[in-house]
Length: 318
Image (cartoon, rainbow, N blue to C red; front, side, top):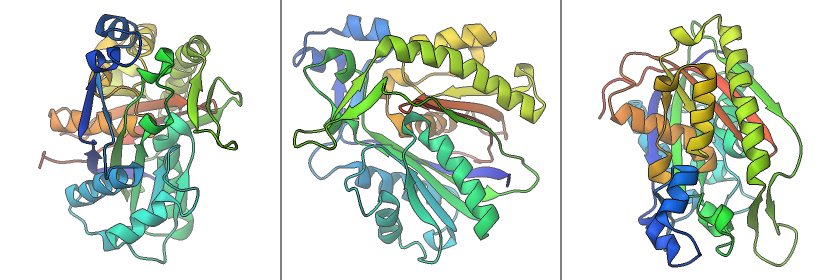
């Protein structure tokens, strides 16, 4: 598979910050109940004039600028989302038009839920290999607040809106080691898409927990085996930020809790935006300055999962 090196990153958050205390005024819950069970303390919701599209455009524009490129340099655009504003056109097409990216390149959306950003990374690698080109823009973005049942405290406290974007450069010296899979069922679903009533997220939390703590270690181990590496040679592990308990359980199982990054307390579960959002924060915190070896793993609706060894060359914080 064509090697990729991440050279630029960006993020976008909507303007409305919603704390656990704010949610306690809407649904029967409390800051202690949410934070103890999930690790989440706040999340962001879109307000007037904000949407999946606006977040994705903002994050993508920032990632391209941070890569030192212009939109005309981009040779492939992949957007991962389960909450696009339209069934068609795709968010990727709207992003292409908004940024002024060239027309004669592959541009599309994918739906792999919380594994979407890494599915998008693998897809971009294949696109560059088949179609040619040097630079790929991969974005994960969601407006999950409009898909929540605010009477269901088991799910409405979990999710937030955000977008994260990365620019990859084709690099034949840096193999892209990935592990992709799915286990088709409805443990996580968005109901109502084919009916008049609004779509809402439904989730079997216990089943998802069991799935996640099984698939995360196994996927990461398969990626390391493909790369010929051990955990001792890995600098950081970035999991999809779904639940702090899931991350802590897997970190303990793999014997490297100090390498697992968490920022779920700040944003909640942002689905496809989760992994690039974490990488952006790590870059801003000075943790990704020296071409570190980063393992990433996403898991979510489908049920899907994706693991990857990411090659980073992000440079100094701008």
